[in-house]
Image (cartoon, rainbow, N blue to C red; front, top):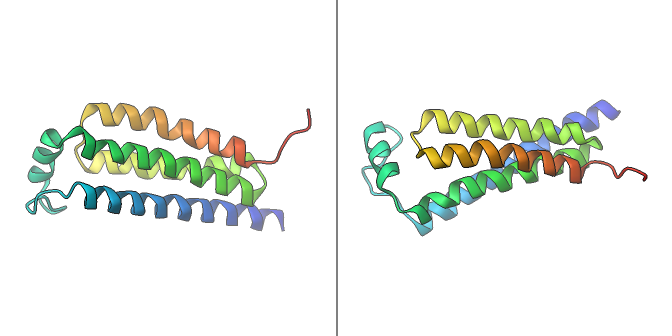
Length: 135
């Protein structure tokens, strides 16, 4: 039964993280709508927009990824009753973040922030969501 709980924790943690990324992206696009020519099928327009977009419109993305990694790891650890279950969920969110960074051109500062903050948030989420240790 413990393995079922761990797998469920990882799956639910990842679902929570993906859901938060979707909500964060939706909010960010409503606050700062990209120009109409910026479509996923037009990589040159995306590249040009990412280089000229205001910092406020770009800042929401790494913040969302970081919050999502923390929440995914926290939920995974809490449900799975193991910190490492949360770390697996957080690692999967980090992997998705890296895939996003590889597929869509981002400014260098976003790469650095994501590579530092997302795994750190996942580690903290797993640590705080896991079972309390007796001191």
